[in-house]
Length: 431
Image (cartoon, rainbow, N blue to C red):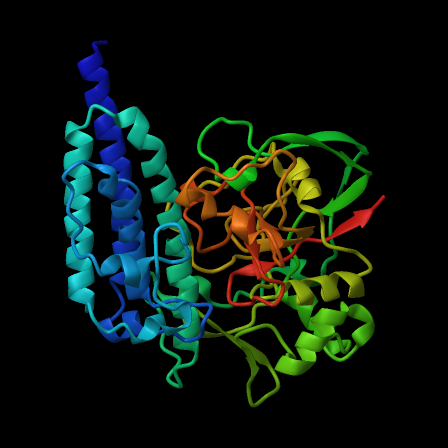
């Protein structure tokens, strides 16, 4: 194969991947009105419009702006849509993103189209594809992170609307896809425990394919023997915890967790509320639905997950225990688009289940650097490294995660009080 042919093939592959990810983001926003896209319901969330602009800013700032002769679409966008990159320059305060009414949604979409056209021209004409590809790939995985945030942030915003509107996804799937089944006896059937012996294990990304910098370097850890639950904790099991006074018994809670629980008045997971008959409902991307005892519990903080584990005479796994157990299990099949709601376990085959398409799983591990970790040079070094404080690691993937974004070495992280993500838990016991 000639060099020109190989270059053309690589260019076509990158353009196809870029187009697929960018269109997926647009499809997520398609069911939403301009008013929906402007909402910011809390400082931790961002408007959908801002996500659409920020992901575009990323490609413009870290790829196009490095090209000789490139002129930014609008110089002010660097201030409005920079998230946290101090090395790039000043930025608009995060808690106030919802009041950025201008540029309007149509202008943001024109911004996306303009940058997309510039990226396409660059990929068709540049002789530096090998240099551009790592940055482009990072930008696409960055956008996939924001695809998940679009879903979790709009769910939180819509939950505050007294009409409790549904989010209709781009495939037009009816709300019944996430309706209660109540036909799965697994909700209180007990756990299958998988035993893993003590030993020295390798964890971290091995260099094959894409990974964020925080997933390496690969290194060895010593693990004592442990038994990991084959499935996730269900809503039914969490209802048992609640019925046993789980939210009112401080003996199950970490000190900071108990203080947070009391200060915020937690008595159930986020989005849960009781109806007139005393039954429980929860707000989902498909509107209000009855709590299905067989579904994986989600929208828990680390504090709640840890309290449940203590109540259940178990604990949360460390991220090393989770990865060592899960690393050989294939990523779940199915379409690239996320299913948008966690599903009851249906497989009766032995082995670990529900690893990556239902809920992120809290671990007992604080988010810190692996041995030998060095942030990337320049502004991109701020992507992960500077957040390695006061956060806890989650593993797996959720019903809002695109399939191609899932890896067994992926280290998601959030503050221990965060609840608006699709976060749940899997139990572990010492052997």
